Image 1: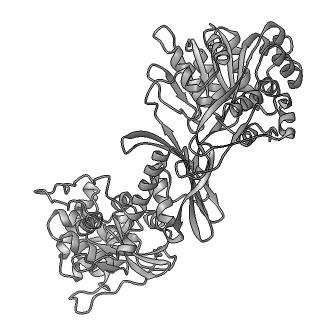
Image 2: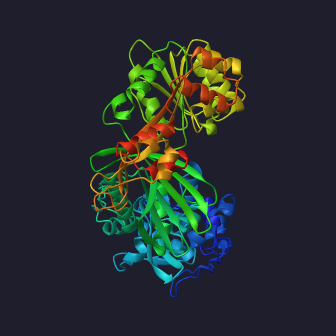
Length: 607
C-alpha cells in the first residue's frame, strides 16, 4: 500500500502542477540542515551512474535528490533503483520501499517536499469532523483522501496518499463542492484515520509484503449525508412514496416526495450539505461524480429495512445545482392479479379475452404514472407458463420476472428499440411486451408483429382509447394494418382514494348535477370531499384506485379505425364502452374518490 511514484509522475515538478484551487504549487525547498540539499547537481550524479542513466536521473532528480539529501538512500542505491526500474517497470518509490531502504512515511514526507505540500501526521493531527464528513465514506476509501480542515469557507485542506494521481484532484473538488488544497499523508496512517472517522476496524498489517487486511465497512455507519439519505429513503418507503425529488434552490436543498401521484415537501436540507448529499445520491447510482453539466441516469438495487427495492436515479443540471430524482420501484412481493387492479367485471372480461388471443395487439394507454406498466406486467404474469416464450423489450426493464426473457434498450451499445424488436421477432417469441411505442418505426414493427402471429402487449401515451388509435395513425401505422392487428385498447388513470377517516359528505348543486346528467336524481345522490387528518397527512386522500376505459375492436369498429377519434369514440360508446369520465363519476357516487380528483386526472370539468 506504499505511496509510489512513476517516472512520468516524477516529471511533474513543483512548477508543473497547480493545486485544486487553480493556483500554482510553490517551489519545493530543501529542509535546513540537510547534508545534501535539493540543488544537488545532476552532473555529479551522472558521473557516478553513467551516461546511459543520465536522462532518467534528470527526470527523477527531485525525488531522488530529496531521498539522498535526507540521508535515506545512497547514490549507489539510487543507481540500483533506476536499473531495477528499467528492468521491471516498477515505480521508484515501490523499489525503494521494497528493498527496505525507506518507509512509506519517508516517501510521503519526501513527496510533500517535492510538490511543496503540507505533510499531515494523523497520529498528531485530528481532522475537523465537519470538514471530514463532507467526503462520502466510499469516496474517502476509493480516493484514499480525507479532508483535514477548512482553510477558509470555500477552501479545504485534503490529505491524500498519492498527490500525483491523474484526475484525482478534479474529482475531489467535484465530490466536495469546494476548492481543495492537497496535503500528503502516509497511506496506512491515512487509511486508519478514515476508519476512525467512520468508526470502522483499523487496518491490520499482515506479515511480509502482503497488502493490509481490511474489515468490510458496516452499511449502517456513515457520514451525516449518508445517514440523511438513508433516513429519507426509509421514511419514503414506509409512507408509500413512488418518487423522491432533491431540488436545489438558491438557499437550500428542497426534498419533495410523490405520494399517490402528488408531490409534497418532506424535508429541507441546508445549502452547505448539498454537495455531499448529491454526491451520495450519484454514488448510489454509479454515476460520474465529476460530471455536473450533462444529464445522467443510473440504477441500483438495495434493501431498505426488510424491503428489496430497485432505484432509478436521474440527474439533471439546474441553475442552482444538480436535481436528483429517485424512482422507487418496489419488487413485487406477490404475483399481481386482476382483482388487485380494480377492474370492473366488464373490463376484466374484456382484458382476459384480449390476452388469451393467439395473436394481435393489446394496447394500454395513459399518461406517465397512470399504472400502464402494472397492467402490462399483470398480463405477463397471467400468460407466463412453460408452453409459451415470453419476451419484453423495455427502456429500462421495470421489474424482473422469472421465466421471461427481458431485453433492455441500450443506445450506448447500439441496441435501439426498433433493432431490438426486429431481432426478438426472429427469436420465435409467442408473446412480446413493448414498454413504449415512441416512434413511427417501432410502432409499425410492433403492429406488424401482431398481424403475423404474435401476441403483442404495448404501452402508448394517449389520453383515451379512441385517442390511442389516432396516435398510432399519427405514428404512421396505416388503418389497414391497425384493422388486422389491434384487438383491444385500454385507457387508464390512477385516482386518489378519499381518506375514509375524514372525508366529508355534501349535497351537489343543481349545476353540478346537470353537468353530470344526474339532475333527475336530485336529493337522492350525494358526494364526498377531502378534508384532511393525521392519518392522511392532511391531504384528505390515502391510497389510489384505477379506473379503466376498455375498447374491444369489433368488426364494426375495425371499419372505423381510419376515422376521427370522435367518431370512433361515439361508436365505441354505442357498442357499450364505459368512458373514463363515467367510471370516475361512479367512484364519486360510491364515496371512493372526489369530483375534484376525477377532474384532475381526466382533465374534464365535473365540479
